Length: 212
Picture 1 (cartoon, one colour):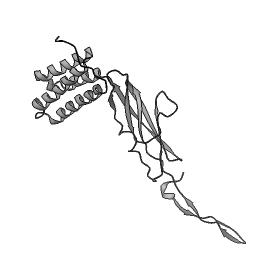
Picture 2 (cartoon, rainbow, N blue to C red; picture 1 turned 90 degrees about the vertical axis):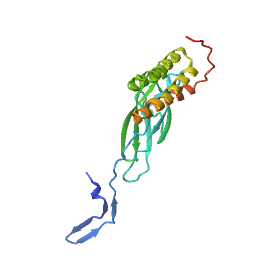
Picture 3 (cartoon, rainbow, N blue to C red; picture 1 turned 45 degrees about the vertical axis):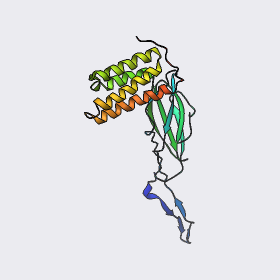
Picture 4 (tube, rainbow, N blue to C red; picture 1 turned 120 degrees about the vertical axis):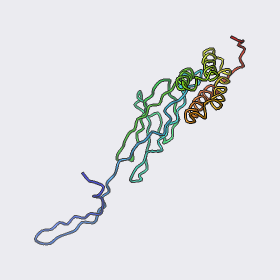
């Protein structure tokens, strides 16, 4: 099997007692397979409130070829034999649940694959995870109350109130928790913002719910 170090220019000399002849030179090129890398794809998505699927952005830009060959990209999910996308950056729709997505990269001579898990969750699941992630921070009563209220209004389908509760939670995190653990606070604020963004994709009507 040829190695990269074997690449170069070669010729063949054929000889017998009467003499010899040398062939024309030939270039030996040793192809190195490309490396597929789908790790830049976002691994957690929140579906809109009224949907059981979400838009996923698949990113194969970290893939490379040491020979600088042009690459072709194909994306597959576990249930499909045909690719769901054929671009290095692809937008696809995935259902709620854990989706195994495989990127196949080829340079025309060799190929490699990389599989990532993309999880799609509902806003209710996202709020529940936010509550679990903020156990320490939620010891502050106003933070705990804001998250509890967000869960209750979401269950009622009162999305405007849920958004307001989550925005209040963000403000309270900045006020009470940011100095104790800045990294955790940033993650909590971003998680709340991701839920708000998912809820904002719905045509939210003004709430007519009264107190209680």
